[in-house]
Image 1: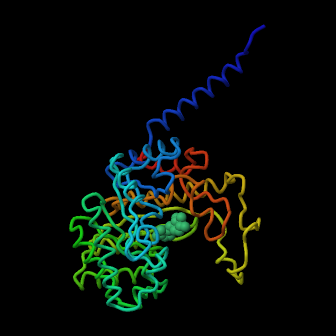
Image 2: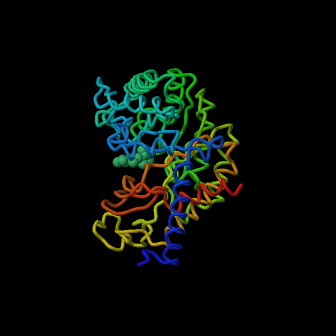
Image 3: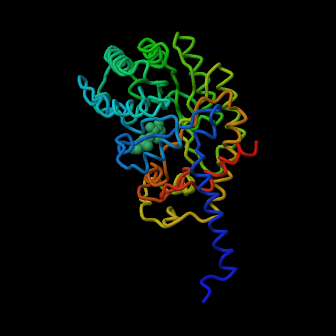
Length: 371
Ligand code: XIL
């Protein structure tokens, strides 16, 4: 008996062929190589990734990315938990990981109102705050002088209308805390690039706020090298036009532009639900977690098109863009599975839960192949 007939043979040959094509693609292709000479391609690393707990994930990180940001461990609550106590155990490992893999190493973040060590919220007046900032910024930046390539000096200082956010820093020092922070960082490491980093700063009012903030920092003697646009985006917004206006506006100030925390949510947002009480508990609600098993092809395609449009714009302005960093390596570990609602299944990145490249990955890679 013949084991296989001709049509079966064709099917097998076709499958082998497409398998080969895919293998060729995945073995030789990577995000970092694809955009070499354009901008760095980065990822945020969590503790397990810094400690190389999963060899498959580690291999993927080294293959795809040439820049890293610490997702949490450099934030003040972890690195400076008490007034006289710094904990550099994890941050040292993070720097060593980047150096070992010859990566661009970003520091996130020095001055931020969130994930603040509780003792810092007790700072009462300008004298105490000045002493805190001097100690905090000088100690951390000097420790990694010449080893960290850029720092988020201040994170999220603005309200949506472009005014300065109320925080322990603003309350004790007024607007002068901003130039002060940038001066201290530049003093501790004169060569490192210093960034202001924030979300929603492609929106017109907040964008004007960033422009004013940058001008104020410079007018008061601070050194600032770049603006970090976080890029926690949605399928429909911000528009490509507003992103482009922001790239142009920030680079017109003589600054580098980085996309520092890119991810694109595909899930409904509780704040868009008119009349919904945001304090309502959405956990376990099927309406808010529509794709618990897999992402339908139609949405997969929307995500791929959105990423293609965004990267197309990045390439158009590659001379102004220093780095594009994703907020996580793969969908399974994204913070968007737990924010703003805990326990959902989101699909915001280019690599899926099984560590396989998604349609969106291919759409971004293909942009360069077309050129
Ligand atoms: C997020 C982390 O991803 C989470 O693990 C953590 O629980 C909260 O912070 N803007 C920032 C990042 O600048 O530091 C935040 O990271 C996401 C929003």
